[in-house]
Length: 614
Ligand code: M6R
Image 1 (spheres, helix red, strand yellow):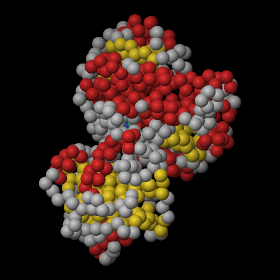
Image 2 (cartoon, helix red, strand yellow; image 1 turned 90 degrees about the vertical axis):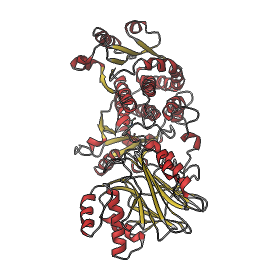
Image 3 (cartoon, protein in one colour; image 1 turned 30 degrees about the vertical axis):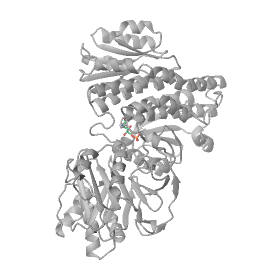
Image 4 (tube, helix red, strand yellow; image 1 turned 180 degrees about the horizontal axis):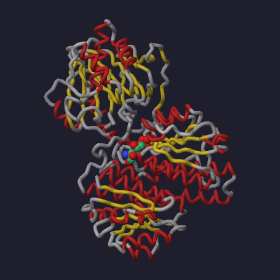
């Protein structure tokens, strides 16, 4: 989704802004732009459709000087991706430039009023309406920029993170936030602005996260001053960001996605660090310790999430129901928020999100809280909005995930959900001590077993070449492996643009089997001990119709291996832990197919890493 960068200090702004935009590329975008005030007091705006490289090429013969500037990557919502619609946008008089993440919902009525006042527009965007509105208040009521921004934002319905430059004040950037993330980096005599901490960490580790309905005045001389929309002063909390630069670079891998797939054994260890005793005899999550009563005596859990995090939630449901014997519902956050859900005191809502900024998940949390539910978050991005608006939570600690297709966040989420289920089960006495030790000790073995799986990377790469012809894929799994099938299908769709569907294996005969022919690749996750015979029958049904089967099996499974076209072997583990192993080859399969097809795996078309609009 859109990315914001800003700089004010003694250095040339443009190179810092461009580097910042590159750091935010992972969020997904279709055009980019910069705006600087140069030493002659001119406010320049330069924009290009396409990638940051296209913008850099466009800047080649332009005056990009200036020690104050703002920059943006746009993910189109209002109007097609093109130079006119790209940000920053000028105000009519050319004295202001503005960048914006989010959506101004009432932009049409605001635009109508501005047109009545004689304003004209060069883009189709809601953002241009906002910059004109600020200028309207500034000129009409002779206001300074801060007061004009306050007046304008009071009229706005929607979500925004904005940054504004004013030609008449080359010492100040004004930024504001509502439901769209914004971080200010505090350097030595210089200040940075960004949608998240990734562009900031090479300059500073001191960050202020702007809160909803707050406006930040960032002044070259006097520093950062935060006020509310109503003008009350706020003392900002300065956080220390621990993110290191290596974690947001590719480290020798061809793509972030591949790097992140290979990082998973280490990530999972990080998720478990300090939470499981090294000998696997105990597990503790501080949230469950601090709010034991809420978790143990909950009448019901409701998991809310989107996309891959929702798939992790489905695995969480099986884990919590099986180990804790508490009913669990899993809802798409986007549906939950509009379904008038039956939710209230006694319910525990588990919100799962990698980015911690997903608009639908945030809205679902707010709704659940307003109805008295207790909300626990499972989040990756430290200090993100979801991390801050839940009652309590557990970070998954897998480090920044840059590839748009989520990989290590998924396995990190499943790891935390596994620990959560075991932790609650221990407290509720729904698991024996012996079972708990066995489960934890096996969980501790997963990183090594995952390393074994990753050794098949080359074999999976060569198998992937066979399937670049395919226009469709089916993924099947049962029990714990059903969400793995859904997630495998989502990965393939997202980065290779091949249509793929995941089903519970036994559902196939109720419809999807009609699709099977010699052209149809079917990926079957067939590791379940309990349902082995059933999955075997499903595979036989596919082979009887000439389908091409890639089976993910437990090492040494000669029966299925003889029956299918391709086999990927996993080390043996407990049924409830197979998702952590089985998702890895499916990530690799999607990755290699997309690479063979020449797709941009890290920034697939139309997708955004952090979905901050509805
Ligand atoms: O940041 P979140 O986990 O809240 O994001 C939810 C989805 O947007 C996300 O999982 C999306 O489906 C990914 N592109 C999956 O690879």
